[in-house]
Length: 424
Image 1 (cartoon, rainbow, N blue to C red):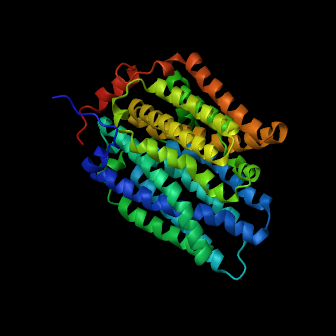
Image 2 (cartoon, rainbow, N blue to C red):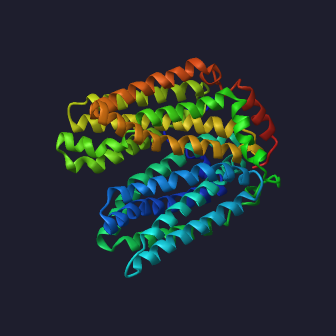
Image 3 (tube, one colour):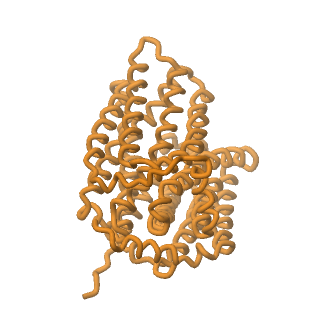
């Protein structure tokens, strides 16, 4: 009998895996808490200082530990008990939120403490995320990974749309300290769920961590042009066409201050729509073409936002951009999770973290500098077109990615064969 194919969101991972249900529930809870804190942290700094520079320093503080500890976190994921690493970092993150809560309750909150905690947030995030992401292919069989990828995207979109709104409400009604208190509770609940993961989540190699071991993930990535292509496409898309820094100027140009929040959420709405109709993703074998094509269309959508004559068409262009970004991201995750050996998965998750964490930060700088030189619309249009050219160029230069087919790619075949005898 031929399997019926549907565009609807594939929830098979949620139905078939107890471990994944715990991971998804924990992710929803901490995702909301983290987004609430993401609103409260800059808001509190702005309230304390009234300085744009003081708020901007938070981003500078956060990016450096992610770069450093992302690679170390990947090595830790391949050397130690991943479940314990994730839970330990969850506790560390919860203590960071507790410190912010206590500081906010003080008569005179300390700005320096806020900066220190922001740095520690990034340290724990860099250490935890590779272990967390490398758990997925360990806990799930290959055929459920497309479903898990789509559900994870749905979780992220839910958090990114709902969390900031919730944070704004809590901060306005009760104060930023209660935002931090909400986050503390979210980490406690998440840790209690993660403790219940099966023993499969303790998979680790017990290898000594050396500098060579830490950077071996980079060496492995260099040996695979298809992987390098996935990172290159992501970096190009974010560096050239990440538009968030321009949103306040867009509402100023159209004299629509009411639209600022909608601009920030529009791409998440597009991503959510794409996620809900991603059921056929697991049947798509030409995953390299999907990554490059979707990233190129992301660039075209951002350029379209630059030529849009009114705020409504800008919002529509950003919705399309978010949908294309989600498609590209989903197929990147599928290549990562289905072709990288499990014993290398943590270190490569650290490398992936570098690509998707640094790109948006550099993209905001590019967008701002370009806007100062060629204007707001020029920044959006040029960035979108450069993204289109760059992503297309990756397809031309790295044929291993463009020709990637899940049925024939040697790394995908090797991993399917190596995992076939694993009992789930």
